[in-house]
Length: 316
Image 1 (cartoon, rainbow, N blue to C red):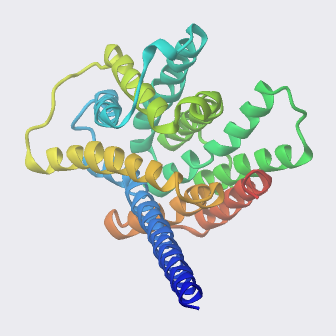
Image 2: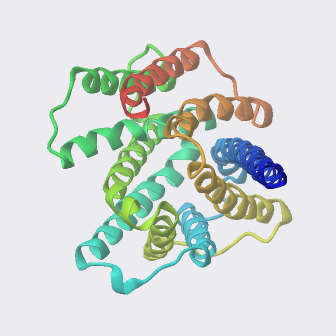
């Protein structure tokens, strides 16, 4: 009888321990998920202020030098968090990383930093957020997949939305700064979309943080030959904005993004592309006192519809 009681007591202790462990891990899992959503929210806020900060900064620094400083610094800060064994990289993969650095960073953020000052911050943010459309199209081309009707409808709506938000319902004025800025931001969105699709295999094998750190560092350095003026402003206001763009919006922003991406669904991560134009428009109105017209909101609605059509199947 005593042996049965002892066995029962031991079993009860094991059940209690297992239950306590399950409750602890469940709470820890929930806490980790909560932290991930907080990190995603921080990322959203930081990414939504980039265009506003660039316009606030003005033309006191060469735009390519600013882009180079942002991504070289971010890449160097990320490198210590990565476990990189260069012996494991194949020649084809090294060329793929170089391609991503040239196209995805230099090829994307040189036109981005040149184009943003030519447009309202809200419009620049909206155009750049169309990059997932071009990522999907590039992925289809690389995988030799057929283009569905949804892809064509989504692409058409994306371009139409950009046109409405920038030009309204009038004919384009090709001599205007806004037209040139729109063209540069579209190039930026296309090349960043190509980079996203081209880096997919590398990220699957080596992790997003590792590939991003390498691509950012190389891409930032590759921009340096295109810098025309290496002078940096010395006034506190300009230095504060530059420091924010480098360490806040880029370094902290991307570290929070990758922290969140490991712990939330792809759908949650993709929500950044839907929410950034809205939050960026709010900051543009609050800080820059931008006049948000009805055509901007119509264009935004059309762009968000195009993103939803193209990303719906992929994030489901």
